Image 1 (cartoon, rainbow, N blue to C red):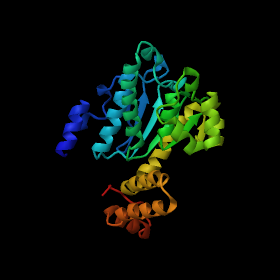
Image 2: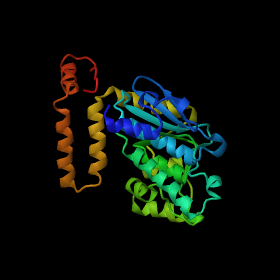
Image 3: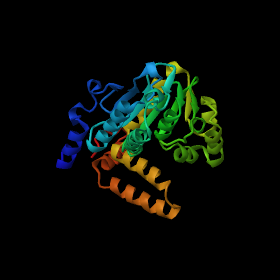
Image 4: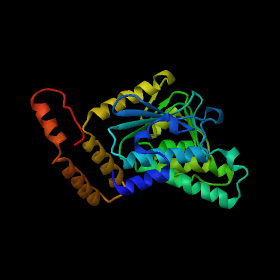
Length: 284
């Protein structure tokens, strides 16, 4: 580990070997499903899993740590505790006594959380188990893709509170559902169902609540069985390419492709195909 990484970890107060231990978090539950997959559960069910300042800090500590530490994990599933809510957004009870300066300082930390999730190098699957309102909907929009329970609902009601979505919602949502639909959602503040979210392209699959996690984990297992370097390069190519012109994006794709060519995983994949066996990818 580099000196820079050590300094950052010291600032985060979580050492890399303890990064995925639930003991180091008060608002998150971390559960390893396998050597390559773990689940992050937003764990404030008494507050509908709304994020207070502590949860915001713990989320960005976790995701920044993952980006810094080259772990063996290849996929993350994010969900909420209980069946009622995925995340109700920012904790307005905590914000009730904030003056403008404190509010803005807290929001700087929310912005850091947004960047940490958006820039996560490995795939992040959202398992939306209930209400995803305000910042919770924005949090869901930051995932690479979403599965939702049949009872899940979404909303961005900020304009009814005198603010606008400020955790990426006015940018991520139109990139997912289109400009006109996003304007309707944001300007009205109305909630919408999981099936509407599926129809509009925000959600990939709607399943019964008791099948939600297993469905997300099943997909995570498929992803984690593929070559991890290729997965990271493919994710980055799609994500960054969407912000470029087609010509620039095609050039970026070739750069990402070329990074996979000299890897042992590429050679293993071709050899396994010719030997009619499953490849064993090691991420190098």
